[in-house]
Length: 160
Image (cartoon, rainbow, N blue to C red; front, side):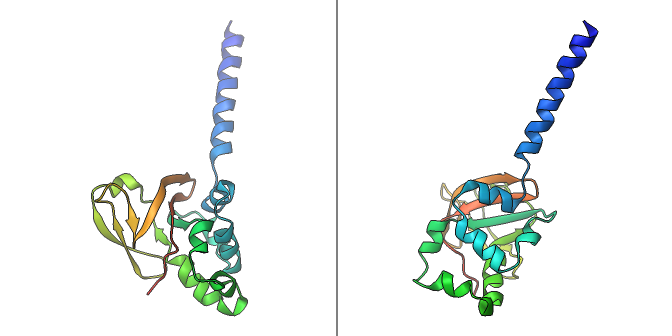
């Protein structure tokens, strides 16, 4: 009886550990698994930012979807991905990242500015039934990663 109880507890613990391990992924891996961030993943690679976003963080990333990148003028993405435009690409991508882990519940009903890793400010408005970041609509909030959180947005944010 004791052995059966122990084996049952051990099996349950193993399943719990496996579930946590299977779910744990950094921001980059979480975005890649989602399948709607192929352009963002390519841009992060071109900007040499993958290792940073796989780091310990925590980070809050406002992640534009592939559809968001399609809203840019024709040729913009291809131009930004060129090696000679790496500095501009880094500036744009780091403008989408805020240090720390900011969940939507911390923003509910508020309007606030947040300083990005790029150094500029974004305006977060969660006062009108949804959340907007510099006018970009948050399509999905609080996508958990083991080193932060992703908020999916419908528009690429451009630093000033």
